[in-house]
Image 1 (cartoon, rainbow, N blue to C red):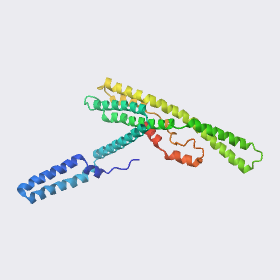
Image 2 (cartoon, rainbow, N blue to C red):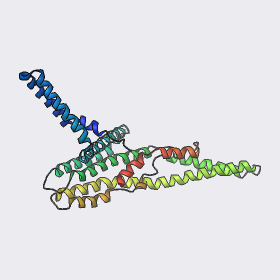
Image 3 (spheres, rainbow, N blue to C red):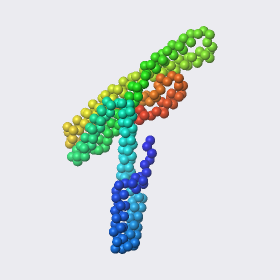
Length: 288
């Protein structure tokens, strides 16, 4: 969860407040020419009183707080966008970046359309699409990470270990405790194989979503561009957005990079899964 923003700090650093303070300084300088220090003190006192009154009032206004919250969300989105682009560039994912660039250009064109007062399309509507482009980058990063793993070799290793444990269980000289430990180990390996199959299914769903998202984004763009002045544009866009969103379970199990790390205890693997929220964040944003 993002930390609570400082509304007072946002007010003090707001460009309008800085301009007002600069203007007060200029007025004080001009007032000091005919009136001397008295004019400087008078303007300074009025400016200080006005600044204190504004600092006590404006940060508590709902409109101002909503603006600060939007700015914080925008900054967080921009930071995440830059991080994901840098990671994909480091991985050499030029195709994903090219597709993202096309989607981003479409969103910028929609921002221009939303600035036209004659259209019912709002900036908030376009911001939803803008956020989806960042989520697309996040899912591309997850997909690239999965693709670079050597799952097949790891799966072969697990199969060999399962065969080895089953062979040991056939030894009649095993004690009850040894047999119990071997059966527990066999259960661990079987769970790894089951997780591998679940991962393969969800990976297919992720790849299908990554293929469909740019095309559906293009459909939304064409919808707006062909009828920019249609009524209830927000409702039509929301209907199209509902087809762009993908369910949380598409990426919910893509967190652990050590899925086939069979030497790691089950508890450690579970902790790793719970501690890696990257894919869940992307999917949750798409869901909401």
